[in-house]
Length: 162
Image (tube, rainbow, N blue to C red):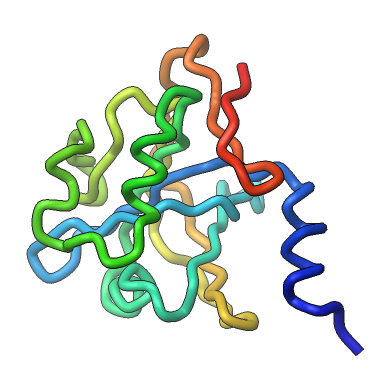
């Protein structure tokens, strides 16, 4: 017996999750999406994970590409999170409204003004339910402005924390 999905979603919404953008360069374009299931996995070797829906373009890209960048969004970057979570947004031009740089390590987008960035290489993927768990070896890590705070998803809303 399992919990009904609506109930699970309501209860799981009590778990605050860091709001991040994961980006990859795939087929000549940068693909990016907002995720809120990100966690540090290991210090030796340095690894982190994120989860992405199996039907997402990002999941398709990760089947071909093993380098990606995670931008941990700052407290004032809710519009970036909302845009890159919007279903049906165009692939071409989706980053025109998101200030960013290109990572020298991954070739993917790093959101300007983020609280932190990680450049990673996929170490393992694990299908689980309707998501894919992606574990990455951390190739590079940088911290942004310590006063930028962070953006979290809690109780169905994006919230800034300092």
